[in-house]
Length: 186
Image 1 (cartoon, rainbow, N blue to C red):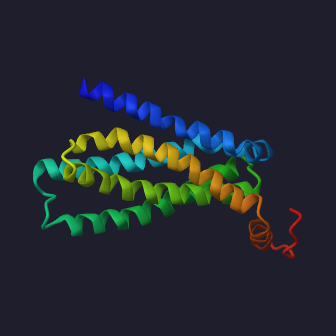
Image 2 (image 1 turned 90 degrees about the vertical axis):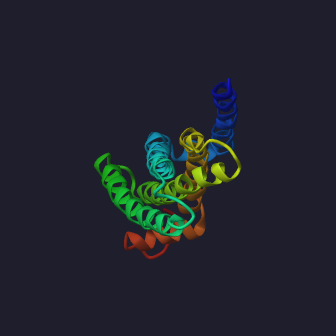
Image 3 (image 1 turned 135 degrees about the vertical axis):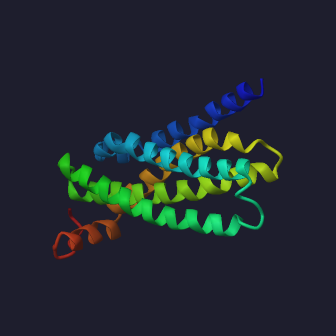
């Protein structure tokens, strides 16, 4: 019964992704390639967050993660977030190039991937600890992090894509990366 309530709540919360996409329809119509990478982006975030969450839950269950070791454990997860966001960004960049994605969209996708993975690992490490303090079974964090990162992943992707692809500053930045004169008409 508890599982059903939890899953129904997460299902309702998951609807936020659809609202975010609907509010950014013009961006997605102008740059449809973003949609092609969306499952990769949110999937990477969910997977990375789940791994961090499982490590914390396992540490709690085995007693290796406690008040005395918590800071050291979280520091290690922060370093892991930095490392994995860089590694996965390189892999995402290579994938985008392999699929001949336009350079500006590649930069937007890669930047979004880095932010999503970093945030997901940090949230994945913190959420079980927060749930435990609230008296909720930390095991719920695995499903929760997936939904939270789906929503944040979509939000990060459209926000970063809009900043990189549709703003004057973003267009200037891309033109400088490709060796242009800084003209905004890309």
